[in-house]
Image 1 (tube, helix red, strand yellow):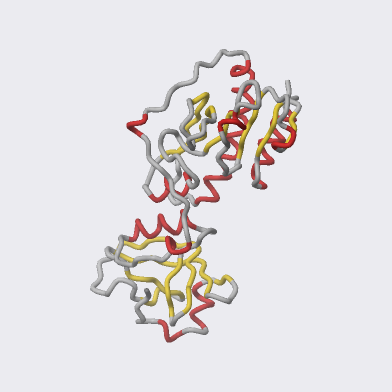
Image 2 (cartoon, rainbow, N blue to C red; image 1 turned 60 degrees about the horizontal axis):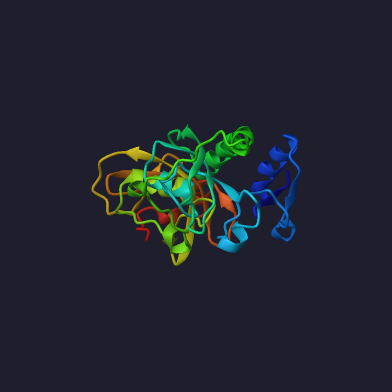
Length: 265
C-alpha cells in the first residue's frame, strides 16, 4: 500500500506522524504520486484537478474541520465561532473537484466550549482528527465503510477572511464583537482605530451593563478600560497598538490617559 500525503501547513505534521506511527508507508508531495494507492490531504488548502485526483488507485480523502455539509470552505472554525455554533468536529471525506463536497467517510462531533478561541478549538480538533483518520483508514481500505452523500440543502460556506473583516463595528452587540475577537485572532486580527492607528484587540470579555454612551466610547474600568457596544461593554484583556508590542490594557493606559472618553472607530 503506497499512500501519498499532501499538507502545506506545519499543522499537517500531526497527521503525517499519526499515519507513520500506525505503520503506513507515506510519501509526501505530488511528485511522488505515481503508482500511489491512496492520497490523503490535511491542511493543504488547494483544489486538485480531476486528473490529479485520479492518479491514486483509490483517489484522495481529506480531513476537514467542520461537521459537513456545514461550513465548506477555507475557514470553518472561524465561521462556526462567528455564527455562535455550539458544536463543530472533524469530517473525513472523499475529495472531488468541488471544495469539500465529496461523500463523508467518517465524522466526529466536538462541543465548542463557552469563550473558546479559534486556536483553542483547532488544538482540540488536532487531537481528534489524527485518531479518527487512523481508525477509519483500515475500514475504508477494506470497503467496510459506505460513504454518505452530503445533504446539499444544508450546505453553508466559510469564506477566506481578509484584514477588513477584523474592523470592529461597535454598534454590534457585545456577544457579536466577542465572537469576532475569538474567531479572527491571530489572523487577520480584530482592530479598531485610535488616533489614526490600528489598535488590535487580541482577547477580551464582555460586561452586561446598560449605558447611554455612544458605541465605541472608551470608559474607565478598574485600572484598565472598557469600550461601549450596542448593549454593554467589551473589556479588553490583551491589546496591541500598531507598531508597538502586545500589552495589557492597564499598562497601555498608563501612557495613554487621554483616551478615556474618546470614541473608537
